[in-house]
Image (cartoon, rainbow, N blue to C red; front, side, top):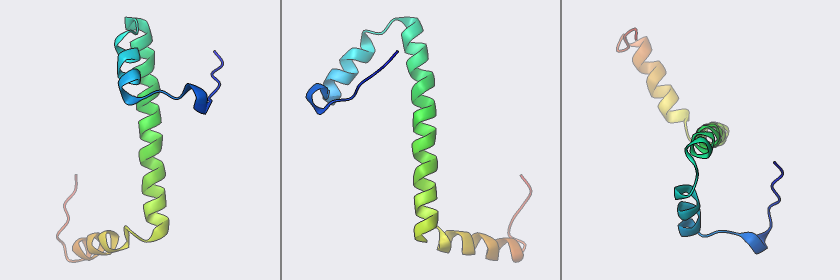
Length: 75
């Protein structure tokens, strides 16, 4: 399937929700699988941006300090 994106065919959130309710069970399963992968990639991208920008530095340093102080436990 080829999908072409155009601002002309942009959908509102309400239209997207309606379209999802009209999917067959098979299409809904495929959509769930696609969205799970899409969402995971978006999360990974955000974490990468946060790490590169230094937003996670304080959290990482605190975790290292806690580990060195014996405040960590095996999972």
